[in-house]
Length: 219
Picture 1 (cartoon, rainbow, N blue to C red):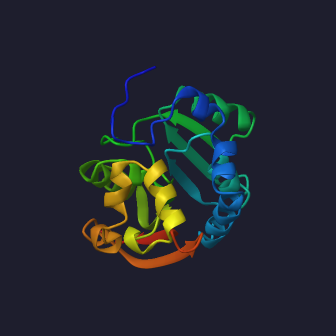
Picture 2 (cartoon, one colour; picture 1 turned 90 degrees about the vertical axis):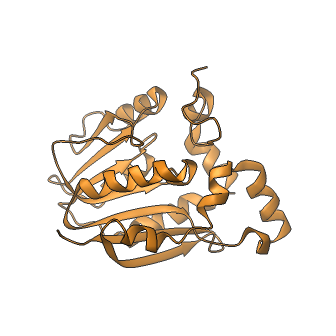
Picture 3 (cartoon, rainbow, N blue to C red; picture 1 turned 135 degrees about the horizontal axis):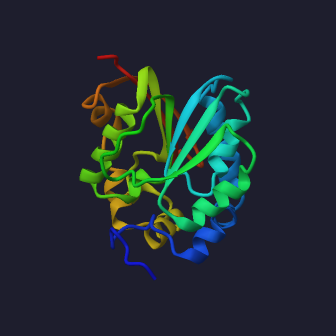
């Protein structure tokens, strides 16, 4: 197996989990996450002609949900480094010119030849060290059109010690150490430091999951 870039992270998946990722996520959430995702994407208010950058796009399941609101002029570009995820993404959207995949690390600075009305990241950013998260935020900002929105679907901010014992034990068992740090941070303040404002947030799954929308302040 290829050596992990971040040994303490839980977001770098082995080939078996990558192949069955969508199904595993649905089972792990007892069928609740797909419904929460659909609701979250609804709150994004995607317009027919939007251009969307999906950071850490995985199999393209999220991109597919977003593309349902696009017309023939809308676009989704998915970025990921997993070869298994790339194969599933490209197979899912074969013949659909609106959705494309690029093998690209999101944890290092990069520059694409275009900017987007929306940038989306789902259950990826919590799995990195905080200094790497800051790189990802800057990548999102630099690829947004003026007034564009950055959407983070991930864990909300909460006190793990106040969780019911069962939920706390599951969280401790399945999440990496970076997630414990992630839930303690004030993400609105962090994003303000990168030029975002006009926040909106929507909570799911007993309020442990949040869609946070941050609008870019034009330079």
